[in-house]
Image (cartoon, rainbow, N blue to C red; front, side, top):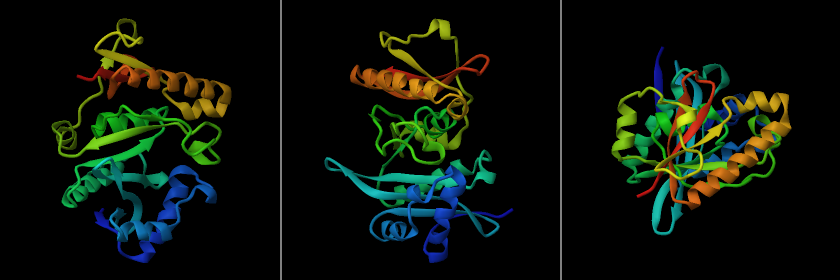
Length: 255
């Protein structure tokens, strides 16, 4: 099996990106980012990469140039692998290549947003990649219309990936086992240096069975994340109960 990451330049590869979005997330046409836009992002300061197995493009990432204050960085709007190739470690290789190419471009930060109720994605972003966060956004795209977004307010966590930090360098070179905590012995009230916020292990299953329960998780965790950030906490890990049935964000008091 030949694996290749490369910067996209061929129009046929750009045209494959919408198909990967449909496969990865079950998006309707309304939610698909068109290939025409992505070609312009590549030309004018962004970064669009493709992930290929034996010549077939099965994943991609695209990021555009962004600015906050005087700081320039890349905002990674999408990164995905087609459904049948998910869970095989290819997402990590896509983000690893994106990091390497971004550093070559002279930028040290990549940001992106993700659904904080998606436990596997949260674990990947925070624990595996080493991103951090102290920024939460409410319903940024409106109520989800299709695929994984459907039916809930599109609240998002803003991940900040500091590319040359020791934390990120270590995560790129090593795979750390998840931390196990005793839920009876951790702080949920933001009174200690480390505090915790629980999220569902499988929000997708909950949405299929009971949208009211899913909405309750959204509203409850929204309040907790926003309150914790106002009190000076920052997300630094995703941890589990011993039986792996409960999932928690670990937050540390900054400073």
